[in-house]
Length: 255
Image (cartoon, rainbow, N blue to C red):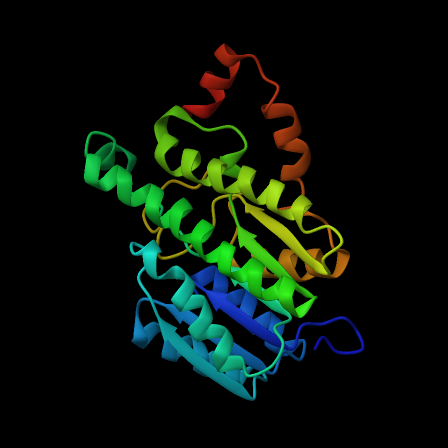
């Protein structure tokens, strides 16, 4: 159960070994989350993330291995993670994603399909089971990592942006479907974040680090805003960008 200050105490993180997820987990543990279940594809990275969680205050940690290219097993992964908590879940985070290489993937059918599977299909399959379980317990929160790239898809990154746009729109409807159930879904829309996935890439305006994203997430969880932007200024930037004429948008997007 959340503590008297509304802070989540039992947390499940899918994609828990990613740089952003680890930064968020540390902030949650410092704010008194005591049970953390981390799910991902690398046992070594999950073990490191679990150790960090303990160092920041978690008293119980466990890990679950899964492959986001296998959405047919998503429900079982969710079930395994929930059962390791052994209590009601306060917060579920989905931080699963694949940035990929647009130029390498755009003419490769298998690679393009993999982008969709990891960024959309697996999260959607997991959300079905998460929704069922949280609605049954009558409470809980879900945080889904989308991207600012979902708001208006750039031609030079349409695979990633398009995948995130699909997830983003679905979660908007899912959030509305949860009204009255005691369960709430929030979207996280970060700009480019300095992580191991973006090493060597150019840094566009509004690029931040994992810790900055985590700080914005903590503020967003406390405010219950349906969308958490990181940095917050992006809310206003994309209000303008989404309405630019196409010709002008293409000049901005291709920079």
